[in-house]
Each structure stands twice: as C-alpha cells, then as structure tokens.
Amino acid sequence: MGACEYLSWSRVQLYLRCPRAFRFRYVEEAPSAFTSSALVLGSAVHDLVGAFYGRLMAGESEEETPDASAFIGACFDEADPAVKLGAKEDRGGLCELGAAMATALTDHDLLGDTWSVAGVEERVEGPLIDEAPPFVGYIDLLMVDDTGQLGVVDFKTTKSRWSNATLRENSGQLVLYDALLGASNTHCSFLTVTKAKAPKVQQLTVEGNEQTREQLGEQVRHVWRGIESGTFPAHPGWGCGYCGYQDRCPHSSA
Ligand code: SF4
Image 1 (spheres, helix red, strand yellow):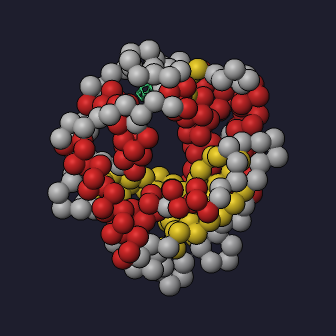
Image 2 (cartoon, helix red, strand yellow; image 1 turned 90 degrees about the vertical axis):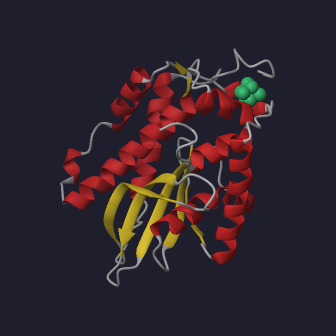
Image 3 (cartoon, rainbow, N blue to C red; image 1 turned 120 degrees about the horizontal axis):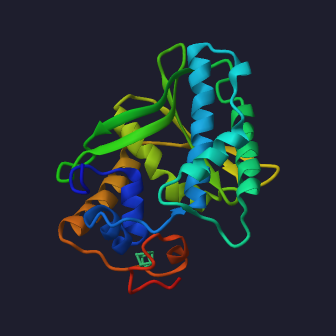
C-alpha cells in the first residue's frame, strides 16, 4: 500500500517532524541512505519482549529464551540499508545495552494477578476520521482480565525518563489504538525503558476519552489535508542528523 492508501501513527509522526522527509519516504519512495542505530536497537528490543510474551501466551518454558545480545547483533548485521552508528556508539556496546533493556522490560510485572496475554503485535485497522484513509497499527501487547476488559501496552525505548510533556506528545498513539479497538473501558499504558546500563522502567497510563479522540482526529485531519494537497515543507534541525535523506535534501542541516 502507498502513502495515500493507509495511515499509521509513525507516518503521522514523521509528517509532523518533517513533511519533506515524509515526501521522500512515502510519496517518492526514495531509498534511505542508512538505517539509524536507534531504530534497529528499538526494533530488536521490541522483538525480544514480544517473543517473551508470545512464549508466555503459548505456555512455553523460559529456558528457551534466546541469547538477547546475539539476536541484537544479528539485527544490526542484517539491517538494510546498513546501520549508521553514532560517533560514541559501538556495535558490541549497543548489543549489551539492548539485552539489558529487554531484560528490564520483561522483569517488570505487567500481568500481575489481573491480566493474561491475549495477543502480541496484534494488528488493528480502521478509520479514525471519515475523510482520511484507514489507520493500521500493531499493538505490542494485548492483555485481557477475568471480566473481559482489555489492556493495551506499547513498549518504548527512550533516552531518558519521560516527563508529562513527553507522555502528552506520545499519548495519541494509545488513544488511536483504543479507538481502533472499539472496546469500552480499555486500559492503555506505555512501558518505557531508558537506554542505560542500568535501565529504568516506567509504566505510564493514558486515558482515552471523547475529548482526546476529537483532539487526535483534528490533528490527523490537518496532516491528511497537508498530504493530500502536496504540502511538504522541510523542517531542518536536530532531526537531520538521523535522517536517511540528508544527502539528497537541499535543506539538510546535518
Ligand atoms: S535532511 Fe532534515 S530537512 Fe531534509 S528531509 Fe531530512 S529531516 Fe527533513
């Protein structure tokens, strides 16, 4: 599917960060010059934590836990295009860091006595507003309790602990998933982990209600109008250093 056939939370976020980068990626479908190390690390940690909950759902033994560091190393080696490491980064250090982060996330008692695993990487799809294409999303962890209430968890790897402002900035993703699920009284939360040798984990709850859905719908409406009308202004800044289109972008500040 192309850019105009469906939307996702990450597509909307890319448009908001830099509409020109959105155009390179989803309209021109230009190849990125590199894969960012943060993207590979975050994705590998997600895969490890997802596999952990997948094994729990299947009732499999934890003895089958893979070598997390080796798995992350393979993700770095197989990335296409190749990974660009930051000036102070090295592959081995990132693998150890990612393994510690995945362990910190799986050690957090998310389920307690209340929840059981109902799905991992659960696909949700549907319209948020009439005039835009449908959204597609993947819920990292879907839980259910004895009463049938659903719980949605999204895992985030972060540079530092989230402030209230960062939570507010990201909360639309869970408001979106809540709306796409269409269930009532869903419990939505982020489980964040810091990129550190001793990672810190935070569980942060997001309330989805009529007001937050309307706010998200208005934001998406403006983004969609921009995409539909071909409005893709460049937004140069710190993000250019992580942008795979910096070599072809006349506005790059990297
Ligand atoms: S290099 Fe900077 S301005 Fe150009 S597309 Fe990338 S983020 Fe946007």
